[in-house]
Image (cartoon, rainbow, N blue to C red; front, side, top):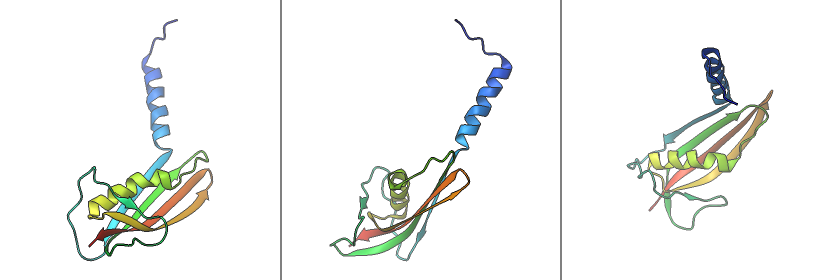
Length: 123
């Protein structure tokens, strides 16, 4: 069986893709807290300190924010936000992330997940 794509079917396909792309959004930013450092290279490792503070001395470099929204009752968690947190940390010159705080909420079928953290640079 061969499917023949007519012009209206392409229009329907484009609308379906646009709808699915509109079902999720990510917003993120960082704010520098004082001393500035150059951004780290794209593949640089960024440590995640989930509990407490690192044993090494450090300086607070940036405040990191990641906001995720998904529809159809699909939720997000820290694992979904970590790539963007690491990206923001690298852009701000931070070598590690500490003080991770998570907030969840829901509006209708949209689940909202917001994470804040602090980017640090080891001395």
